[in-house]
Length: 501
Image 1 (cartoon, rainbow, N blue to C red):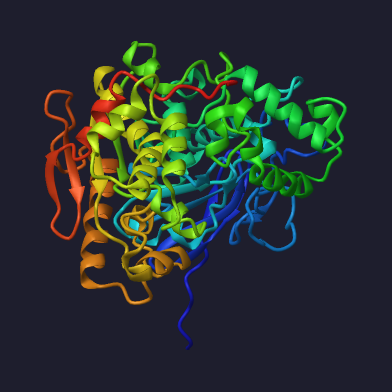
Image 2: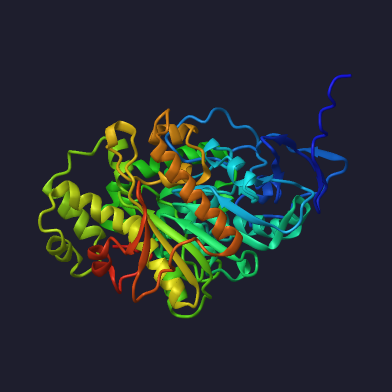
């Protein structure tokens, strides 16, 4: 008789039964709705609870992409059921497994949980239940509109975490051992969730790679959104005025709007250097304040936190934009005046890096202002709030392009997920990963697994007195924080919301 194939896994959620599929020794469930499609009357609204269904819902394919505001072709729209999540589990019949919830947000412009870089296979094989979510970004998630809640992308993330609390036990996970994690704007989302009251109790631990300091004041957000609405011919920056515009057309218009931000430098200041016009707003309600003062001031509780950055955060953007090797002294001075902490930061950088040419100064201040210092200061603020912080810096150079990318932004993610053969992984690491790359991937992935499981990353915790940091390289070491010159320049200057100039 022919061998009988195993039945496809089924799980009953609070909304109905889902059927996934078995894959590489674990079970995957994809495209499960955690909220209703945010279209029609629900467009730009807070997420609404998902509908229930009868029978069995097939959960073998990823849900549709949310509208992305990136200069890339993602093909025709696939549907509007954007608010979905995916679960990879070693065994749906297990109990008490640690849970990792991954927020795949980039630049507050993209959120594609289907990216092969986030394949959960290696982590599920190690015993983690891995959840990845889609949420609204760009104008759908963060346009500051007068007649709807702000920061809807964050509200989506909270709704997904609430779904996890209701349902993850049915997939073998422990709702009391949830770690929320992300890179770049996903890490910014994690940092924001640390401060938001509705998120309290929805996760136990947090991991944040390359935390950005991207926030706007309401005054700036209102002016930016008004300019964007005017570009579209809308009468006012309201949901009512934008609701009938096709979501993907709106996303494409935001891509073009972002490309022209430098024209507004005199009015919008530092925001124009980020490439992200519509970012989270410190509105006093959904997001009451930025995480750094909330933690150091005792208005948010510390937690078990794994946080870090790469050494050459800005190098990826410099190389991919074609600007590497072209920066002038004028570019360096403009970057220092705009991004270094006021009033003496520009002079402090010149004094701290006296041999640096324009290229090094530009890359250093951009790396510091956008990612490195927000990450380091989040570790410090969390420790001040009574939490336990584990800090890392990735120093290992990406082999691609002859090493031109250095230890660039996002290099740590395919290493941690073990997805070196994914398109992004191959772009950064090469088609044939070296033994060195494989070993470093194993080290970082093991740190993730240990932290999600126990709350201990495997090296000494970061404390303000010693500031011990895991420096990840071909020969990793635990050392005092390696970017001390930059830390001293930024001490006492936590990331502040962008405001009108």
